Image (cartoon, rainbow, N blue to C red; front, side, top):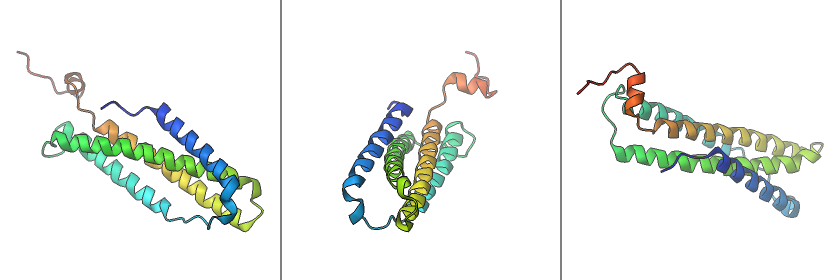
Length: 156
């Protein structure tokens, strides 16, 4: 599995923002008010990924208790890749929504939607950063990484 590329995440966010902005021109009048419930969900997922990333990293380096099975590391890496992509997609949708409603902040419904979409955008960015941290923590240390930590390998 290859590491996530920031370029792919940025492209996903840009395309989803553009699609959201274009669709809102057609259907915003029939949309209900944006719910704020996505914000705590995204932040809780980000917190769980940061804690998992720290745990996986320490267990891979041998300082966090028992060794972690390789399949668990692969599953965590897959979760990280999926979460970063989902965060980029949700963040792009929120950015497109925010770009659309910023033009009419004098109306209460637009102002409320602007606040919710702005906070959702920030939460999605936090999720992307947490997912990238988890993915980084899933990298198996090489022999050179072990030597850099001060653990000298026995010479043969």
